[in-house]
Length: 259
Image (cartoon, rainbow, N blue to C red; front, top):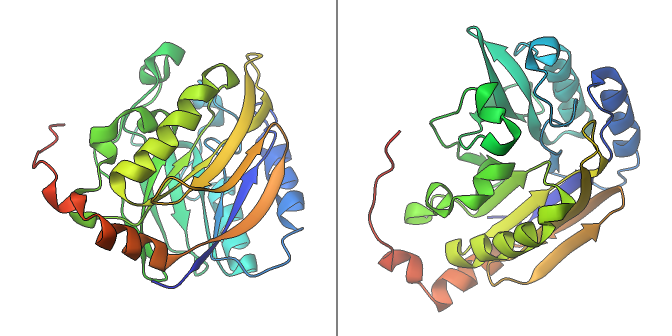
């Protein structure tokens, strides 16, 4: 595991305006001045967290996927974040993992936010995604998934970095700031949460609070309220040292998840 350079984009999202969001994110990312391995964007980064899937859903070869492929190629890194995808007559809140060569994988959000009627619009995913980057095993998740530790459990050291992309409202920011360190400590992994800032089209305010926590619960990065494009490193030896010092993952309960 080499050290990994990660760039997060904590930004304001223009409500249901795909073109404006892609243009704005391109402008913000143009300020990156150092080599990065991974750019992480928020949940539904091209629209905001909307239930208007019929009007805004794209196919897997749509304009946002093409933009992600071009951006990954430009920065020679992986670009990831979630968007609305229409496939087989259904809509998904889908995280895309796009490599510089244009190849990609995806994860469909499993836990749909019923309070916001997300479950009435989108179809839940059933499978985790573990991807590899520079020797790191990375598990990407989406927003509400953070509340479900069984789904996020690091079974057999499946991952070294847990990644959450989100549109998490400020009124529940304390939960966000509590659960992310808990997930890091209980899974002996880095956890990165990338959230948006500002009001959405429903006048819900988002304070960002994007963060990176190391396997021992220490804060590597944190930003509240402001837009930010920031690059930092996660250290492979920190994961190894934490697991050697207190190897409790080996004593974890065996369980299965039923779909």
